[in-house]
Amino acid sequence: MHLGKRLAAIVLTCGLSAGLTSCGFHLKGTNPSSAPVAYSVMSLSLPPDTDELQEKLAVYLGAAGIQLSNAPNAYVLRVLDYAPRRLELNGKLVETLLRLNVTFQIEDAQGNPITEPRTVVATRSYQYDIETVNTDDQEQKFLDHVIIDDVAQQIARQISSNRLPLVKQNTPPQPAQ
Image (cartoon, rainbow, N blue to C red; front, side):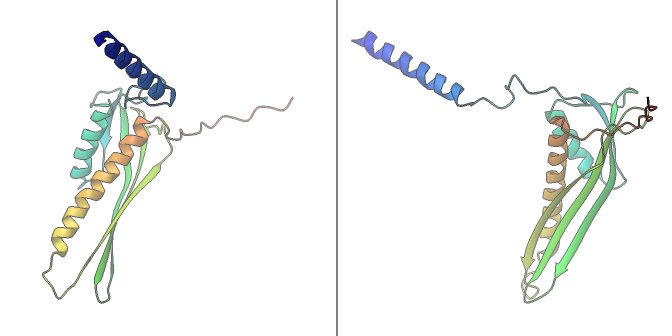
């Protein structure tokens, strides 16, 4: 009788495992058809005053399997535009909209673009009442960190997914025959 329960447990476990496999379930990172990262060694080139973005990119790119290096043959992740914006809408309450646009591309070691420029955007908003305790500065600082983190994650995901549009090579026209 004890053998019957054990056999039933084995059959049930195998059946559930087969059901999960047949529905397409897999653990993250174990998909055998996932492509390896095309840009496995990179260096970062960012505008001045973007230290926090650089730190976050280092963390997320490293987690995606990309080694950051200043090697002469390393690809370069170049941030072309870093544009934080703040918009205030005044009324009974003040609503503040924070937006960060970052345009980047990947270049080879000689500085030739490999991918088309890509822009990622992150936005957050918050409201406060001017007549109450002013927490505007604290709220904005916190959300600035959140927005930079969001942008760094978006860039790392796009690079690690190998789906950035490549630069089209200019080929000379073929002579008519």
